[in-house]
Image 1 (cartoon, rainbow, N blue to C red):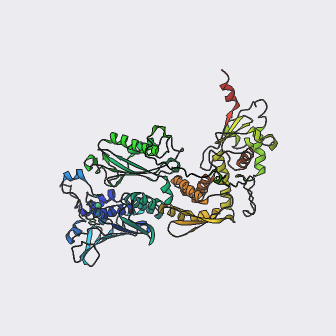
Image 2 (image 1 turned 45 degrees about the vertical axis):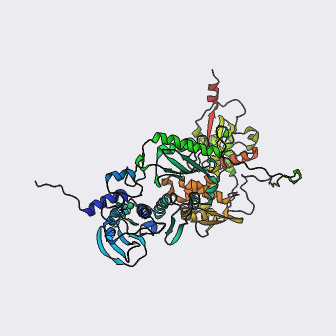
Image 3 (image 1 turned 120 degrees about the vertical axis):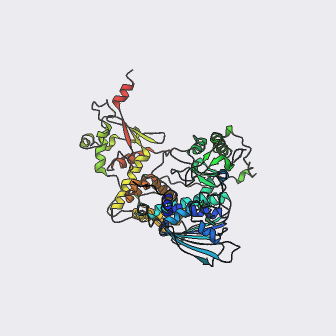
Length: 619
Ligand code: ADP
Ligand code: MG
């Protein structure tokens, strides 16, 4: 038998390499923008059509390429950035592997126009699937412009597995953020289907973060600065009170390159220990400058993993630097910290007669659980407690005051199946506010027939709201409560896209929201079932919740939005409730179809059996 091993043709080898480097349109954006940075550009313009599936165009005003280099650039392992293996240990450029252009050209239709300042004319090259179709001189401006069409045209499996445009666009936005944040001196614009998502002017680090994530982040940022011989750290960490429920704005950059680093992430998180509300994540933007000889970037083709020599020492430095910043800015109990960095603001002297009490208006009749709004109706529906269902649950209380009932039933049995009628059916009078206790402003405790029922107040309210929203979605008419003063929300582009994608469902729920130019929305009305004092906050929380919801669940978009909205607008833990409010909450909960689970399937209540209480006293 003859020998069977042969070298793969370049086009095939490139396609295989492309599988690693180019996973989706966002990877093309990343590679081309990094090349523009390496070319010394001060302005980069990115255009994408259909989340980059149809077209990605990237132009820069960098150094450009000679006609020969322009052709060479598409060869595999062709790079101007390193010459020898030694250079691998002092990399200061974003690229060095010489793989990106060869990979992209293997799986797309690529056009390049490039010109150096010193050249009279530029070069045009057209390559499809590694085949050069045309190379000719062209009149063009200094710098380089790539246009990538029909990505993965010859890799149908990849093309088929691309996600929906909103998802792919989100990935592109992430890549742009990762490049824009560490490079505020570079002007970056991004247009999607010709509408501008980012137009970032040249500025400083802090302002760039604000330009990328929206004005609201500014107040949360606390500066961090630490210089040691091993590493220089600067940047910002978010104050704990602004921590969010989604892991999002957490960025490490090593010598200007975005990286993931779970170990250093822990250093930051531990610095926040005990400062964060449960299940929330702080933002951070930390820039590390260190000798490139002490890090290894070449761990993975996409270069987002970086190995550090001395990583333990660096861990300590990061931890201490973040802790100190949080301390200096008074977000940690301050006794342990040097306060010298704080500015003392003297109180203005004034006459005691100037001082008067602030004028505060409160509405003593306001009741957050009063859902019967005047003038709001939902078709034929009225959102009052459903008394028929109510009548049955009240029997839970039967005998609660007297001797313990001999029947002990498991918690599930209370609400499942036929056992119900047995349990319910007594009048409401037996249950009064007096028998109810709010614990830690989180739980509602109330004696029932078989023991002590503990209700999670937030989850209970989520369930109530969710069922109301679902009713609204099912009914034909939607009631919206018009805002006296329409509110505007400015979102970051990723959130703006998300909001656009769920806008029609929000309208069906009773929101009246319109797009108002770039990433800004006007809220004219909110669902009638909600008592909303700051609708913009509800929208922000709703997006957070929606982002957090499991992918699977998003398929049932309407329901998931109702869940997210219920979670976003339910009363928070830590809210003190008056006895009559507790009463109403319990009424409304048991008027629900499924009172014992929150809309996302968590337990709303539990019953501590009298038997168990007795057992615990038996010794
Ligand atoms: P790498 O960036 O790892 O060197 P690439 O395949 O991304 O590999 O690019 C190959 C070469 O093409 C680069 O080394 C650079 O010389 C040249 N090049 C690519 N993009 C640009 C650009 N926008 N401006 C100038 N030169 C570029
Ligand atoms: Mg490159």
